[in-house]
Length: 126
Image 1 (spheres, rainbow, N blue to C red):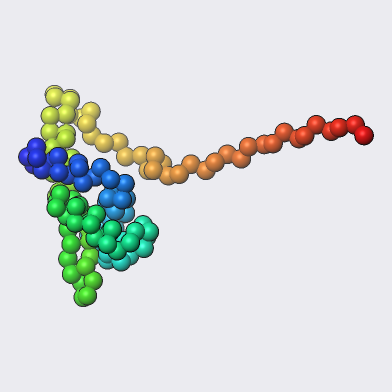
Image 2: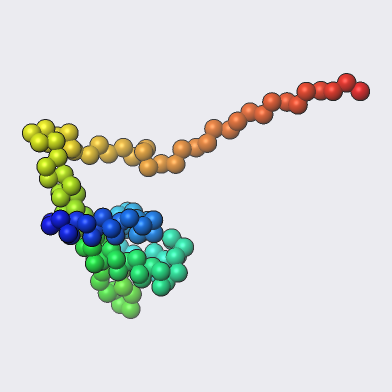
């Protein structure tokens, strides 16, 4: 991956909706999702989804294919690997093992809020 390609990929990820699209599709594997389903799951209007998906396609982070009348979108795994490889290419010099990601499944889970106890109001004398 060249510098300008990486810049385009990072620019495409620098938007909340596009990052949400990428994260949603990362859970789908090669199967992907039809555009309409992505729009519904993320609460995006069709035109807005189309714009954001096109930005991710141009950056090489998504791929699309036709299945019947639907357009299915999925991750372009090679594009993602290329971007990560670009970032980690010179990572940590001779200690490349420091750059290996540590996968922590609980890090993405939403913590359950701890209920707070209310103090009882003081009783007033009548």
